[in-house]
Image (cartoon, rainbow, N blue to C red; front, side):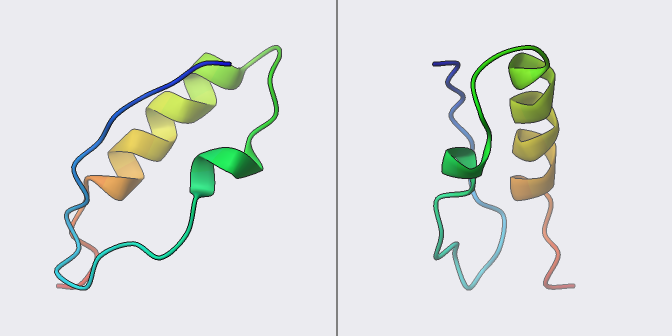
Length: 45
């Protein structure tokens, strides 16, 4: 299973396991790369 580590930018944290929503297979690497960008973006502003 592809894996990424990210620093959550939100001051309130993250209360889910979004990577678990992504299936293995074609496109998994790209999907996780996009998820990291989203998680590392401070959306609280």
